[in-house]
Image 1: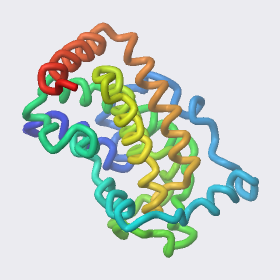
Image 2 (image 1 turned 90 degrees about the vertical axis):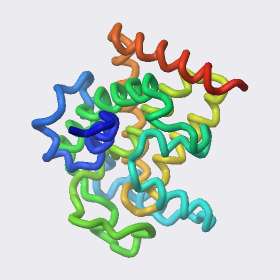
Image 3 (image 1 turned 120 degrees about the vertical axis):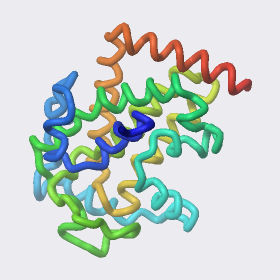
Image 4 (image 1 turned 90 degrees about the horizontal axis):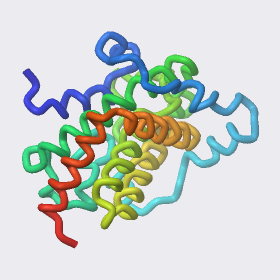
Length: 227
């Protein structure tokens, strides 16, 4: 048994899409349609993607990008909410984040399977500035699962904790951009992931159980953080 259940949700974003097909429910939204196709080979947008793959960043930002290789829905937001933001301390928030990840993930995987875009480092291994991937899946660059997860969680946390909404949304944006800094994804992969994430979160709001989880997490965080 996996003890916290959020760990299982986090693993869904770490596994290749083909390994998840039997473990996730049908998509809530049409991920391929919402993302749209990746830039066509030889197009100006594809050229812009490649020109953006070596962003100038500080040593501190590169270190953060390396830390962001992991997908831990709580650790992602430690820069905003502190080290005390843990699943053990906030079980209602953990349930909400789990539901968010599980709701968005199938649509992202459907888009990955539909488009099978090669990752940037397939063409140029020198783009990698973080860890060299072990057993890399080279054809699932578009959209990015990590980027989608970070943005979906940021949207939800900003809703339940509006006092820190700006910082939470910026952190979600930065988390996605870490994928480009590290050389794992093109900028358009990240952009598409945010579209699918936003669509998935919007669709989740149609579920009464999800709305109840939002309210429970809102109360839980309000008790702990007093701005």
